[in-house]
Amino acid sequence: MTVRRILVLFAAGLVAATATGASANPVAKVWIADQSPLVVRGSGFHASSKVTVTVAKAKHLYKTTATSTVSGGFTARFASTLTRQCGNTLVSARDASGVLAVSTTVMNDCGGVRVPPPR
Image 1: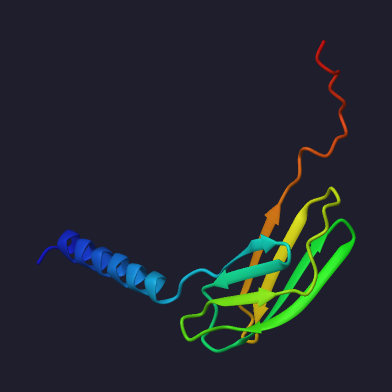
Image 2: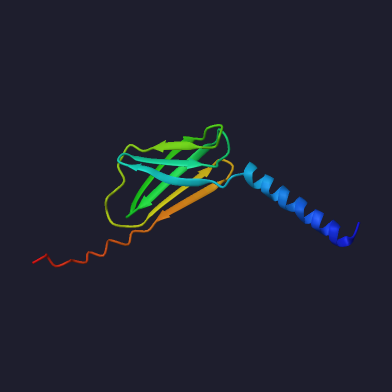
């Protein structure tokens, strides 16, 4: 067997191992599912883990905990509605093992630019 052939087989083995590892350990994600009342959902966390969920928008801070399912997903329900004030929204979720997911929504339509009324 030539050195080149050995290297090709080794590289193929690394690609297969990387692909298997990636599917076994998905990336954690978090998003706002509803704004009234505020509901945050997530996936890719450790199974049956306590997840701390924080939402920050326009000087308002919402915080709660949820428990992830055996598949690593969670639904966090808040008692209040997300503020309608203009501002960026930052959502973060961290489980007890340290897995972190962050989502940011940037508001770009809050400038207060007035459009003249139609004639």
